[in-house]
Amino acid sequence: MDSFNLNRKLAQLALLQRIELADRKLMEKRKIFGRYLFSKIFSKYFINTKKISEEYTKIMINELNTIKKYTANKKSFLSIGAGIGGLELLILKTFSDVHISFIEKNYVSSKIRYGWDDLNREGYNDLDLLDKFLESNEISKKRYQIFDFDKKIFPTNKFDVLLSIYSLDYHYDFEVYSNYLKKVMTKDSILIFDTIRPKYFENVFERIEILKEDSNTVHKSKRIACSVFK
Image 1 (cartoon, helix red, strand yellow):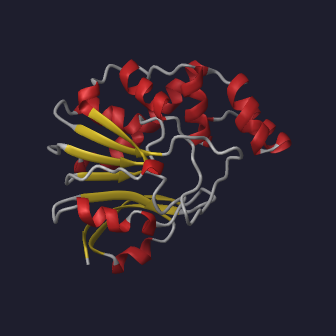
Image 2 (tube, helix red, strand yellow; image 1 turned 90 degrees about the horizontal axis):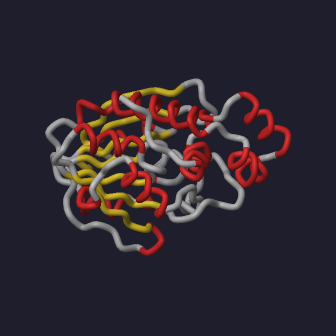
Image 3 (cartoon, one colour; image 1 turned 180 degrees about the vertical axis):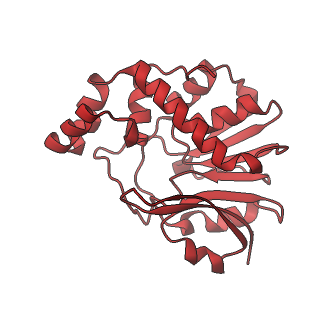
């Protein structure tokens, strides 16, 4: 497929959300000058938008492949912490009758941090840019809805598939959303997320399947598909 349509602002945001999009020279600048200058200056003015668009598209295709067996014949999706929404865009383009609800932060933290945050205080997104990304890639506004996490107004319908790729329990505690998830999941719902503590969830869910394992990253994690709270 063709690469996603990313302008410079979207490419910068994708880079901040997916540090693996940085080339060697950018990573060297990040190491020398620190994450603050990297997030404010180098990620904005020293990027190749076309290359980031191409690489981001490839990464999102691979992400879709890890979860594809759970997306077929599903209608209602919830995505928590999707970033600019590349994976969700692919789902919307692949399945014509799908609707996706997004729960997102609406700011980029002044100093980008990578690691655990118990209260979900970190933010790496811009809801206007998320909306623009989906619209500019030919997705009708009827097929998605965006909810600002900090306004505490969440969708209340039941979902077939709930996604939180490298967000829920990877950057912040699962408990931030656990009570809410219990309300919007059914016995047939599938929750897919990445976690640095997969064993913990054997006592939380009736069924767990490991979909992917990252052992070469700083935060070693597994992507798991879960269903039915205990």
